[in-house]
Length: 116
Ligand code: FES
Image 1 (cartoon, rainbow, N blue to C red):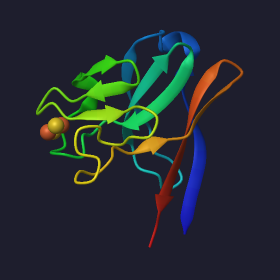
Image 2 (tube, rainbow, N blue to C red):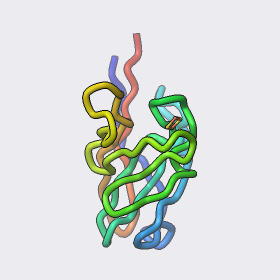
Image 3 (cartoon, helix red, strand yellow):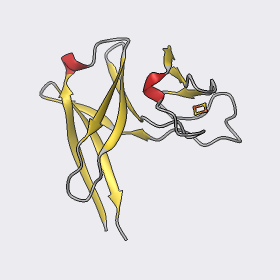
Image 4 (cartoon, rainbow, N blue to C red):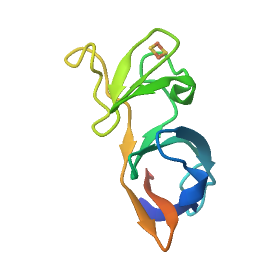
């Protein structure tokens, strides 16, 4: 069974423009705690899993340049919107991205969990 939910991450003011912020979404309804990176790019919000698909390092430690986020551990760079690996798009896995919206000034992320 698939469980899905829009989950509050916090007010817009918690995610200043041109910065990225690490948050952990608390689990509920079968969806586990999820470590995320929230990025505000010129007022548009993006949410990535806070785990580099290369070797598992926290992407939130990385550096953002425009629409990319570079992992500081081995230097792989990911597109913020698509999650695609910029350096090795055909050989390396993308970082997971999540739908995001703003409702009544609150940034929300769409999470799902596949249960057996
Ligand atoms: S763990 Fe991120 S590039 Fe290796």
